[in-house]
Image (cartoon, rainbow, N blue to C red):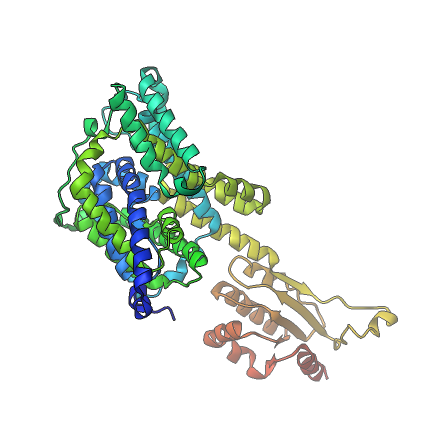
Length: 550
């Protein structure tokens, strides 16, 4: 069973000075990468820029300290941006804090009750669809700043379709200088990532920030910076817990569940990717507990929801990080940056932030993977993928996950129903066929039906296909391929038993597997039929039928 023990406590047994040095270097590099991303993601979430840094510091440290992965780096991620923006606009920062704390509690309970493996029941097509959908929402949300549009709106624009409409309505207010800064920043991000050797070690987003600041200040361009739109604070995060009420909890609870499910999915997916990179194995339930504790701490200290960040985790591994110490160092370095360098963040142009988020959205969407699925996946999976994508963009992630899971369940049941068959044996009339070694001799007055596949409510009506004939006094049900049975199928079997009794027909069951037999025993069906009418093999069942015929 998955142990509820942080990986840190396990890896420290054989920890060395050499590994400590590598972890420190990796932590510093990841902190430099996380700095512009944390600020950009905070702005995309509709909160102050320092909130993203608070999240990376507090949640990043707690999750590394308690986590079930050796190398997981946690912090704000793009997946939460639209959700956080919606919650903050609807319920304010206090509502967001309460939702995040509740999400943390839910995550801890998921870990404590060993629910880490349940995440695998959310289909891959749903996660791919809503991830691509979130990427599109982030992209659409940044068009305004990339083009320098002046959008006038009575209320904050939260919905993706409203943002798209605003872009179309106010395209005439485009600032060419802002577009030039955004385009230059985007070009740096694309080109720098493909440079060889030493250059790869310097985060492209950091270079883009310097280029953007240099253009705006050096050329005296009329472009909005973070400092023009937001107040920058370099003060340390201070704990704050808003007052809870039953009404507030009821209001934000759906949002809390969304945050918890998304945090669980993202963090465990990141852990799986990291495992393959360092040849390790994460502890999923401990990781959920750590994610819960990290989100609670982040909310109390003014941060936003956090989860495992795949890109930052990969950067940690690629730079030598092999233990949770690297993640803790990354948080400490960000804390120092917050105190010393945060005021300079006010100089970062908004088009540069938009360009960084464009790249985040592009990498997050992984459209190559989506196209591959559309070409190769079964039609039912393609329906789920497209539905999850469209619902995320048009409505929100909550609707996408709910309807996606519902569609998946319905289509899965349809698929299982299609493979469940109840067919009567075919009887050979020809003497040559009758002598075949592959055929069995069926006693006179006996019908044999073969049932294949799970017998659940979606396929239970197929039991009704069994037709009883006159002058028959035995019905053999061969159930070797029935792996499971539910209450609806059990009800139909009992109906068949009553029908047989009225016609004076005996039922004999062959090779009933463990789960179906257990259900039948509990329902009293075994006692009604008689234990002696349950045979281990079809040959035994046919012999039993022959004795009844005689």
